Length: 192
Image (cartoon, rainbow, N blue to C red; front, side):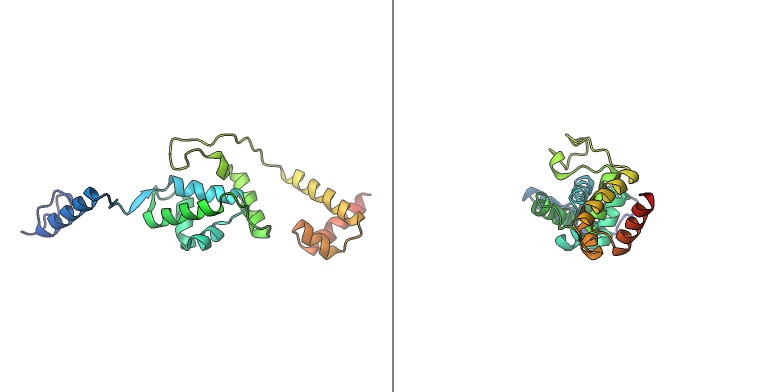
């Protein structure tokens, strides 16, 4: 019997498709999940939650041994489903990292700031991270404005400057470039 392409895969009566349907049925009866793709909601939320504690998508991909491109597709929301192996890798990475903030670095600061601007919920805000109907609880974060961030940085710079630290030491402590420290000092001197 030849394959009838006008029917669905399961409705086709050709020998090949009947064998494939029978094998899938045996797998389901044995307890295996034969679906290759799963809902991407939980995977996306896990990546977003890890960003809240400083893990960039690249860092999550590295820890999960997954392609960064695969994570960008998940984060874009372009696909409602994700490969099951990718979802499992992200879930295990999330379980390992969700209680450990990322080491302070420019990349972790960028990830954290982007997550706050986007309104992502941190790991502990989720009771059921995989349920598309569930909403995070206990978050009321309001991202600081750029002016507030700069004012706080200027205050820290002045305090560190009073201790007599060098430009390089202040830049390292504030996680900014030496040029930023020099320019901020000049601005503060003009204002004084």
